[in-house]
Amino acid sequence: WVLPAFERFGSNPRRKGGGQTVDDVALIPKTKDALTEAVSESVVAPFHEYFKAGHGPTNYPKWYNANNPYVIEYDYLYEPYVICRTEGLPSFFASFRGFAFNKMSFFMEAHYLGFQFIALPDLFVVHMNHGGRKGRNDKGGNSHIVKQDFRMYLQRIYGVSNATLNKWK
Image (cartoon, rainbow, N blue to C red; front, side, top):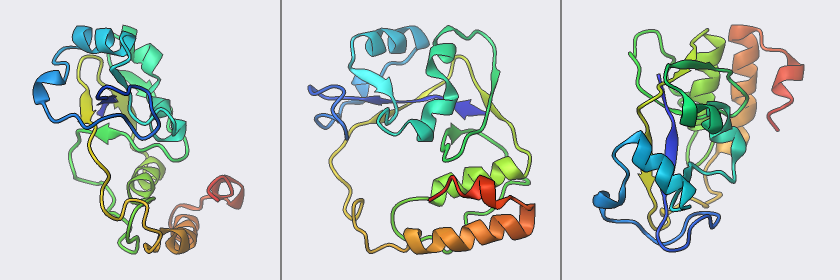
């Protein structure tokens, strides 16, 4: 089950990377109606709108009006927040270190295993904007190197074509 993800801004809404830190949980909308109102006021927005691949497949316009769960078409680099049983799920690709690609690769493999992504119409998660995380932009991780290993793994285990993998550069 996919929980559509949003982020709550401080006083600088819609700024790439967020606005001011939000440290009061009382500022987080508790209902879908309160959330959609906060979105219309631009103090809450779909999570990381500047990176459409990460959460765009959730299809926020559809979710705002949804009364029933709906199937989300997986797309490359999708990294939703989910509630699920762990039975049958892949392990995280253990070679990734540092920032980037670990969550995306997990959901990519789940997709190739045949898992469906289904949005829940009345549940959601809201990220409270916070200060930078140490190492977030640190290029010392190995994700850019390990991507190639993961590509070869997908080809070997799931028969994913080069054409499909060429989207991931």
